[in-house]
Each structure stands twice: as structure tokens, then as C-alpha cells.
Image (cartoon, rainbow, N blue to C red; front, side):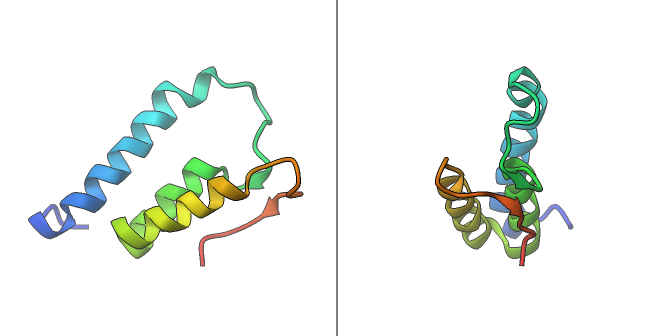
Length: 78
């Protein structure tokens, strides 16, 4: 992905997710994610593949589905 002004929102969103993965995620208990791939990895893949707006909406929808009433499982980025 070239670093152009048009890709700035995507690069910014991906950087925020990577920062979360490096700083916050290691402090969380292991095996707490209901889905595979994890929500942060799903968000990263969705934003990388679909862009900042659509990918962010997909990631938010995924996080909203992460609750005790959802069994989780394998849920790849479409």
C-alpha cells in the first residue's frame, strides 16, 4: 500500500490498531476472544482490505457481536 495522502485515513486506523495490539492486548487475559481471528486482527484485516470507512464499520459490528449471547467461532473478513 503506497503512502499517499489518499491512504492517510487507512494508515492512521491501521496504526491505532497496531498500537492497541502492542500495548493493551498483551495485558489482557489469554484465550478471552470468542472469535477467530481476534477482533483487533479482524479490524486490521477489514481496514486493510476495504478501506478506513467500510473496514471500521465492519470492525465495530464485529466488536458489538462479541457478547455472551454469541457463540463466536471462525469469522473471516469477507
